[in-house]
Amino acid sequence: MFTFRIKSMFLGVAAITAALAISGCSGSGVSRGNAGAVPDPTASPSAPTSGVRPAQPPAAAPAMGRAATSCATEQGWGTGPKGGSLVMSSAALSRARAGRHACYDRVVFDINGGAVVGFDVRYVPVVAADGSGQPVPVPGRAALQVIVRSPIYGSDGHQPWRPAPAIGDPLVAPAQISGWTSLAAVAYAGSFEGQTTIAVGVHNRRSFRVLVTNEPGYRHVVVDIAH
Image (cartoon, rainbow, N blue to C red; front, top):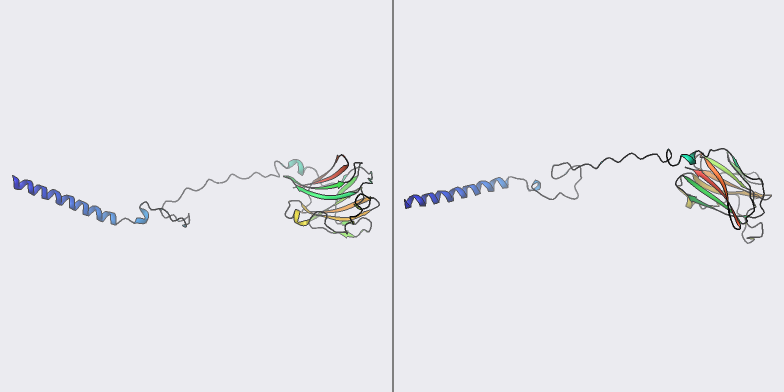
């Protein structure tokens, strides 16, 4: 009986040893790169190291056309001539400035006086200098001729130290409006007999509007060009 128990114990130990040996052989045959390894952060997502294609991000929703939705009003301003009062102001046009909005680019002409001031704004093949008639070409595929019925600065005694710009000089720095949607240039086109002409370059013929606003001591002729 004693001999039988020893033999049984010996057989049990041998079976356990054989099982461990088989288990070790099976483990060595598995690629370590696929057994829970961390993927290489430099690997392309199109060739994952785990062999499982990663989930693709959801497709972006199609963007709605801004011009067809929120800018419809601005595009309806029209491209025809916009004329205001014929009244001439003795106050000088002191500066031009530009601003960029969601649906239009804006040019503002500041008048140093609160009196009524007239204007005329229209598309022309090329703007002619006030007084001489010489062409004043500007960048863009279209040109707006802006007439403000007010003399240029330096001619009314308000800023006598400021010489009037030369024909073709920019009234708004080109770098400021570079890359804008509609506005391409704002250039001086002369002042004669109390009115001033400005050449406004537009990238393409776009709808526009003209407003006159005022505050104590100032008037502003505002030209908005739709995107």
